[in-house]
Structure formats: C-alpha cells, structure tokens
Length: 369
Image (cartoon, rainbow, N blue to C red):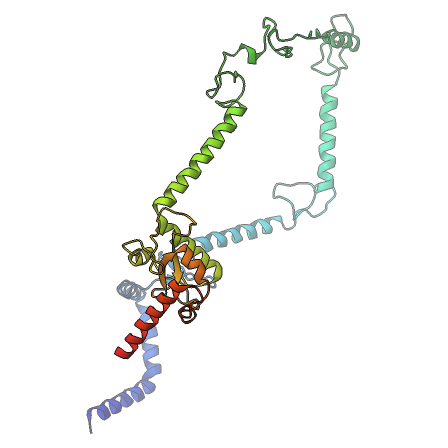
C-alpha cells in the first residue's frame, strides 16, 4: 500500500469516528460552556486578537466593524436606533390624551398641548380680550392736564381725546421748501449740497489732465486718458501685439509649419505622429529645396520660397518616412499627384527628376534586397 492510499484510509477512519461521536462531542462542549463562561470569554477574546477578527454591525447590509465588547451597532445605526426608540416613547406618551375643553383626541399634537387646534385658537382670543379689558379698566385718580377724567382710557394715556388731537396737529409743522441753486462754474444743480457751497463737487475737485494730450480735464471721470487718446492707445497696442506675433513667427518658421500641419491633419482626419525634433532633423542644412534647389527663406511667410512640409504619399498621413521639406511653390505644384505621376512630368521637370531619382533608389534597394 503506497503513501496516498494510507492517507486516504486514515481520513476515512477519522470521518467515520467523527460521525459516530458527533452528538457526544456537542453535548460535552455545551456543558463546558455553561460551567465555564469566564474561561470561554477569555479564550474567545484571545482568539479574536490573534486572528484579528472584528464583529460586524447587526443592521442589514452594514459591514462596519465594532470595537466595543458589548456594541451591536455602528455609530450611525446606533444614533438611528436611539432616535427610533425616542419617537416610540413620545408616541406612547401621546396615546390617550384629549382636549381639556371639548374632549377631542390630541394624540397627534405636542406633549405639552392641552387643547385641540380650534379650542386653542378660541382660548388665545379670550385671553387676549381679557388682557385688553383689564388694561382699559377704570383706574381712580387719573385725569388730563385740562381736568378731564381719563380713568376709562388706557393705562399709558396721559391726555384726553381733545388734548391728544391738538397735540398731534401741533407736531405736524410744514418743512421749508428747498430753493433751487446752480453751480457757478458749470451750471449744474446743487440743491442737495451744503448751503455755503457755490460750486458742484466735480468743479471743486482739482484738475486732472489727460496723460495723452494734456488738454482735457478728467476730474470726476474714471481713466487716465480722454476718449480720442484712449482709442489711439488701443490701436497702438493692437498693432504692437500683431508685430510681436509676426516677429516670433519669422524667428520660428519650423514650429509654425509644425502647428499648421498638425491642425490641418486634425481637420482632415489624418494621422500625425511626427515630432518637431524629427522634422528639424529632416530640414536640409543648406536650406535649399530638394526639388527645385531654390534657397528657402525661413523668415518668409506664405511666400513661394518659404519652407513647407509635404507628404510623399497622399494615402498616408504625417508619419515618419512619408514627409519631407520643400518650398511652398513646389508644394503647390505637386498637389495630390503620386510619385509615379510626378515621374511623367505632370508637375514640371523639377518634380519629374526628383520622382525618377526616388524611384531609382527604390528599385536599387529592391534588387539589393
């Protein structure tokens, strides 16, 4: 009998022994737990600390761990449980409560409520009326300065009706009307200004002249320049910004061509994987066009001699091996012709010689391979 067979027989014997003594083991363990509760808690705590076992919240769907030994819920669910218990206690106290006047049930009202809503409104009106009557009750010994009795009037009253009317009419005195006044310099209205002033606030300010022409007083108006000088200054700023842009494009023609071709490829949906470093390495050191031999002016913009990026095969995008530099004039003459069509002379003798040379190199490379 080999090793595997021995292990299998041993496991089978153990399974049969456990099946026959399972009930006895359960009864023995139950009696031990009842006789040794403290020992059981110590063993459980030591096992949990060893295996890092954390009890979970008893609420449905909650997987938060519990840190306390007697906690059954996490902090949020504990607060919700306490709120539910408090609401249940309030509802229990409200049960069986009735209005003190009509006997209607008021279980849905506050704990301190004694009346239903209609009886509460009637009680408030009666209380307010009683207070008003009490305030107007006769007070002996109260009289007006004219000798009239005012015991039936309000407690705060100090005059009779006739004296009160005269007192009110005497307080309403007509206010003096404002006279129209004008500024002595510009003629503007100064009715709202102080009486000792003879000029408006704008005329009282010190003069503030335009920094452009020095002839217009800007006192009382925002800005440093008058209208014509401001327009001239804005036009000069725009011209200066345009000239700075032209100077930068003239100093960086390769970057300008790179960005233009990338934008055109994005609009046409073509691939554009070449980098600026790759295009800079392809630029001829002598600055001569490889097709016609003319010197490409790097500072020129949209001229026939300015450098441009041309695709060799129009079926591909701007990818390495399919682009080269040429002047803008040669680029326009090539249009969408292929290398084979260029070799026939359809774009001129310069493109024909360039295409035949390229086809010859390709054929030589094929034979060498």
